Image (cartoon, rainbow, N blue to C red):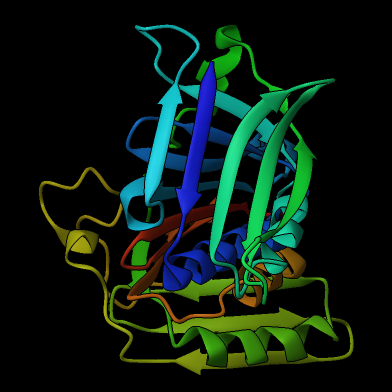
Length: 284
């Protein structure tokens, strides 16, 4: 099992650093799955236990100048590692002006991702700062626990408002309640609501648009034949929504959510080179 990679391009490095920072805002630990073409950051808290889950996918060619890996076996050419994304994020923060960053899987005393940051120096010799980030190697027999979650059979699919605006609304609401109701329909309308004994606040968004698949006949979704005005709603933990929005430093090219009434809200944020899916279960 071997893995080594190198980033030289500064824009790619900053981009990669930003992705890891986003992930570290969403979860304390996650699974890093490495394949020949892609990296995946996976959080598969069982939604049944009230945990959120995440699936973030990156094409390695968009970030790395060199990328070599050998999986656990020829027919299973993949590596699954458990890591604390905050540790990786911290290591990359030291690299914002680096000449190069190398990442390598090592196993001296325990398995580690070694991040070697080559910093510019005035002399001819280069300064290298290394960070060893402990990882756990996930055995082949439980890889199936980390499969891509299926798109839920949603009632409504809708594009999200500008995330910065949504974030400031949610941050204000968070001071008043621990829960938020997110509701939307197939006419491009979405409401964010909180209700407590003392106060009820609703923010309305309209003309957001619905993705084409929201009402396609081929789509096996409960949205088929649904009244366009009728709202689907889910009450979720406001902190989980706020964490998702806080981690988005760059507005995605596409951002949407699918609501399965009273069950789950599935967010999809697409950037040019990263896709992030985040599932927040509904609370009773």
